[in-house]
Length: 297
Length: 161
Image 1: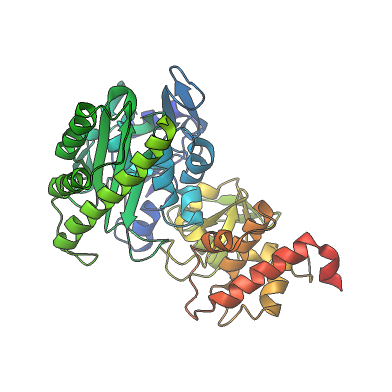
Image 2: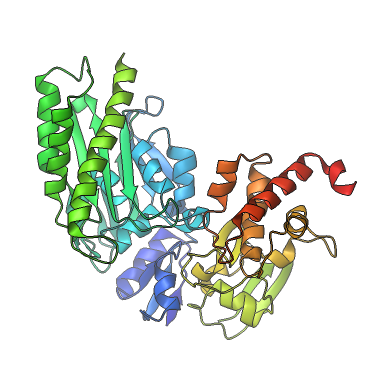
């Protein structure tokens, strides 16, 4: 096994072009488990931890004190830093990051790694989908932006070409309410049985909603988004929010559950996952809407 | 490869290292530092927690090739000679050590918490130790130990009385 240690992004891209078989490693929280258990023996590892360009974030566009603009987060920024440094601009992503593993795991693990692994259960995927994030991929051929909605292709399969590396994630900054919730057997160190993210986009009068660990890929609940966005706009509630009707919350929950196509497995049954998603959807919508009502008032 | 790494303040060198082996293996089997324990090898138990460049990590999830020219501090590096670190002393006194397997990881995690948050609340202690598993189920005394260490750090005179 070769161990490639590029010092710059340009060097990393050149190496990946020469060695498309090389497995990128950053925090190691997924890759090392596979190595330790001999589940995988890559021909080469491409260590990304020395590349300073991947460890910073900045804001593109107009930054109105944490609102507006797009945060470009280097793929090597660990969860701990997202929580500490970006919680005010990216509430949903920070919330999901807080549920990842343990402090030790959050100190090492990265959103780039979550995307690279493309597990349907990855904690950040639903918030990236609901928040309208874009994945920045680069190769020696150039850089391209892949909307999160087009990134996940199947179980642990994504839209990257073999010579590409994930260099950053672009997430719209917002102070509008976002929520994330996941079901697990305890609070820490659990893989999601199912998870859900909701994001309010008041300026566009839209709602984002996405499910995790409940289909072969993380996916948006588009019918639920359409229903709720239409309902809120039709009743003028973006300007003068009122407590949501139970019937609206219930319908939203049903549509979220319908968006999922879960399986029965050791962590939970398909029926349980659908039921839990409808509950998570109602609950997180309620939290987000209450926050929005207070903000507007 | 040859790995050069500073461990507990001393430059160390290991030869014929397979880059994909873990930092935990490097520490225990090549550098003779068995303090960090090998239990789950998947980051679930926290028994192998060490500082890497000042940040607590599971050493089983760091590739040996990734620590070239980096700084590692293990549980062996917390005591000052024969004088235990206040966290270690508090674990002994509070009876927070049962079989001892989880202890090194818990001590490093608690040490880091008290460095960042001198007077942690109980929820903060619980969250900081959420990645450390004790199979003797001795968590109450572990919490007592962290509270004791925190109170002594806040009032160093009390520690020597």
